[in-house]
Length: 179
Length: 68
Image (cartoon, rainbow over all chains, first blue to last red; front, side):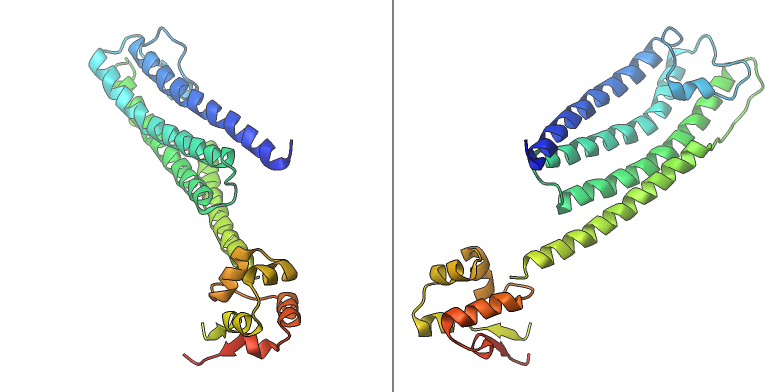
């Protein structure tokens, strides 16, 4: 198998993994909030800064509000996975170093930054919702952890890398037009 | 661009087909077409050398500068 066939094969496999992850993410989030406290909470929820933890019971209307808060980073994550899927489809079709793949990298970088911001907002909203339904005093918290800074840095690096790839693509096209 | 490529004129003068020239200088007919229509970004000296050798002409017969 030559290199291009190898890239096509890996692109196809990774694209299918992205599709699976999209369905898994959405299903996991919906099921968690529908069957509140009967399903292991997702990793992000385990670090809620309430000494009493999450409330045992949450009314349905507040679960809907909490799910709307949860859907902020979820939408960014799903969009990121859709961009990844698009990128791997290009690889599957043999388009490795084109304007479309560069655009995918740029959008992935922006999506990563938006996801981090959305996650910070989500955390603050969920803390407030949980505090309203717990015996603890009412709190509002904005949290930013090192992994958030790493996410933003990774997003910026992706955007810069996409810019370099775009410049390199233009140089490649110019070289192809030197007969 | 102010550089005009007069390859079509030389091909007609020497009564040579584009296909024969492309085979001799080792480029595709598509690239030769881009060269004839001036849509290229540059020409390698080795390519210019091969064209002049085949058409028995000077680089100035192929390339012309016309101030815009």
